[in-house]
Image 1 (cartoon, rainbow, N blue to C red):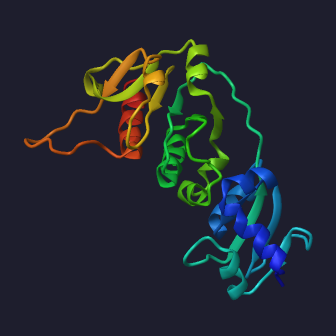
Image 2: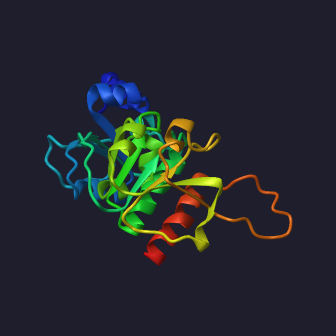
Length: 240
């Protein structure tokens, strides 16, 4: 049975400051929980209406009404687990790196993490003001892909200054990506949903790339950042 303290300590993890304070984040749903159980992430505790057959120290059987009290979903899905946040240091490689400059929407970040997983990109670098990858909505959107993608947060301009790789950035007025010579050993920067890439980061980009608009009207102002990321990644990996 859940105590009031249990409910409070779990539901407050919706806020980033408490996730950072406790070093814990929430994962919901059997499929996604199993992805994390089979990864390097360490389980703190599992609350479920149907046993996962873990030890009593790791698992608590609760009722559906109790699950609703702690779930962040409108329709709770059988189980909720708490996992310890991994400390992920910023590392440097010669491989393709995706970088995000202040992406704010949890759904966009979750989708982008799934895209990284799909294209085999093991490292995602985020600016300090990009949404937290342990946000419950991000976790739901990744569908477990966070277990296979190394996400790190840093001072993005400093990171770009330190890399020897060519730096590409997505802009409305960049070179047509379908006519560009691309390399898979590169950094691709995607910008904020409303403002695009910041001026400080823009000054560090050596290759401006763009997705051309087709059709007669060309009235659409811009593409969703996750959609644009999928198109650009497809081109980088198709032509490299």
